[in-house]
Length: 208
Image 1 (cartoon, one colour):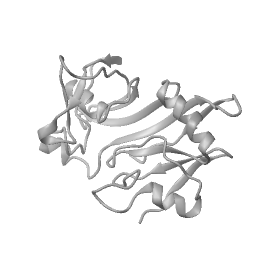
Image 2 (image 1 turned 30 degrees about the vertical axis):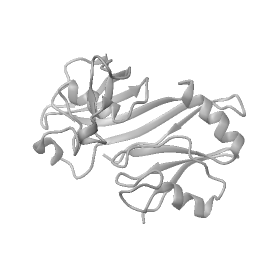
Image 3 (image 1 turned 60 degrees about the vertical axis):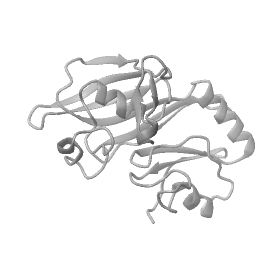
Image 4 (image 1 turned 135 degrees about the vertical axis):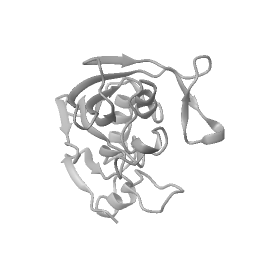
């Protein structure tokens, strides 16, 4: 069991830094998950969103039914701005850009996703280069998902030709083995707080 670091807390939500390799909610892969751990100390916790097991970073847990409803609306209406930090293979040429390839579940290989131009659901990612490491042939990049499709950031970076280091699903073996974890981290959540109406920014730097 891994200790959960609480990054932000008020009367309505708790935001944790979920470690890589830990499920957000109960699942089939392992009984250990962030939600069950948090509920032991904060029994009013609810689930409003989640991260992939391999992804680290910020997850918000509402602390009442009313908070669940209000924060649920923020996510549904795309009024929750999320930014991620990733380290990808290769040197990304453009300083910034966007990817709008539609995604669909790759059913024979689920939970993998794939690009499907005809039947895929709209998916939109913006990216900005933070640092180019010519010596390592890697790029540190900021990713902003406009939509929230499963594995969206991982597939979009692979389609750009720059898979995320440590990605067991979408990276070639050498890039997968370049890190012992997926180098993808939910770094910032920004929103207008639905109870106080104050602009709120929660930030948690990755450990890579």
